[in-house]
Amino acid sequence: MSDNSWTDRIVGERMTVDQEFNSRIANSRFTSQEWSLIMTATEFEIENPEDPDAARIVANTEKIEQILPELENVRSQVGAMGGQTQGSGAGSGSGSGGIVDSLKGALGMGSGGGSYDEEREAAETLTREYAEELQAKLESNGRWDSVREAAAES
Image 1 (tube, rainbow, N blue to C red):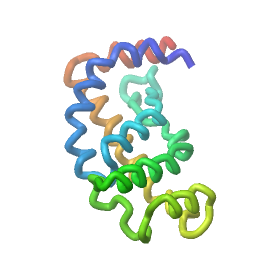
Image 2 (image 1 turned 45 degrees about the vertical axis):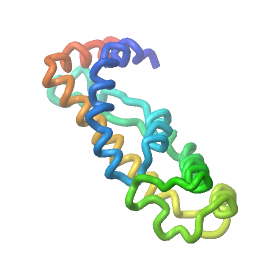
Image 3 (image 1 turned 90 degrees about the horizontal axis):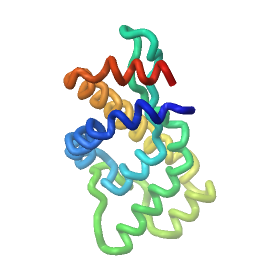
Image 4 (image 1 turned 90 degrees about the vertical axis):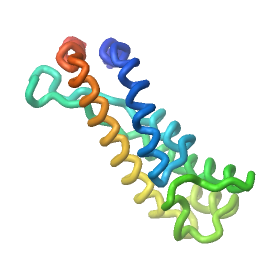
């Protein structure tokens, strides 16, 4: 896709929303490192860019599935260094954790099979909220129409 033209136009708004979103991340199940990984796997798109009334920024989270095992690795590294994850729900109900459990989960053994469902849902919810805030920021700055039109031209 050649959507880069519209995404290049919103770098400043993205930086502002990132700053404003930090408190939401701090109160989520994800650490800032995990959130960075999630955002790396998320692509933002403008749905229906030709229609001013129906156009909206959406988070394409198809690639998040690929990084879910890595979230567990980040947690086990933080745990191994004596730190704690920030999120209140992080790691809850997953037993003792650690490297062995991480490996079992990555290989689909033990309780790791369906354990990523909650992580994926939480990541998708947060990225959807981020997309909504980003669009609201563009609208409040009076830039939404020009960004939407640039996406329609792509």
